[in-house]
Figure 1 (spheres, one colour):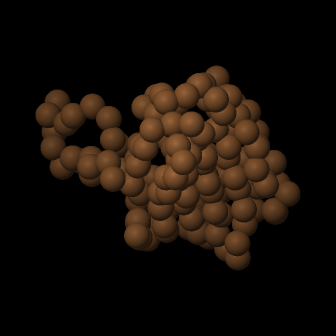
Figure 2 (tube, rainbow, N blue to C red; figure 1 turned 180 degrees about the vertical axis):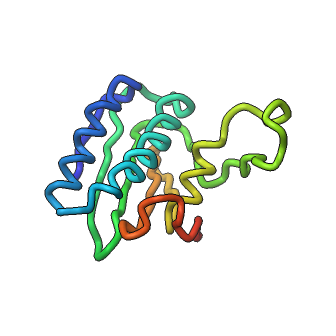
Figure 3 (cartoon, rainbow, N blue to C red; figure 1 turned 60 degrees about the vertical axis):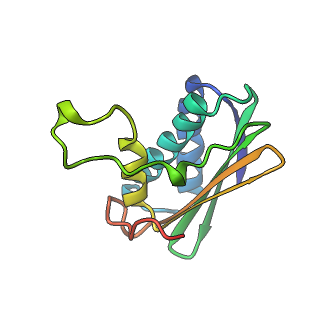
Length: 144
């Protein structure tokens, strides 16, 4: 299923409702809902905050494939913004020495089993696969 949302932070409530509907329709255990919401929230927020090429919509696609959820966020008429190439967050440094930002994407990378990016004709797509039987941070990490 796919739905488009205005490219603004205020859309997150509607995005969460959409995820809840997907989980209900696919009879997915409620414990996986938080992980999926966190993943989508982080990706959506990064597209809104840092990929300002347009003020259009972001399409969120959710699909259940076996025991996994496949999530795709599509941002239209934008410059290239590859979240998979962001530097790793420096989690070993004391808080006061860490640069601001990057922790959310770092956690997403740890939670998902696959994370990919495509860019063509000013359309940016970020795709992640999350095993629904390991709802927390027990994903296998990013594969490319």
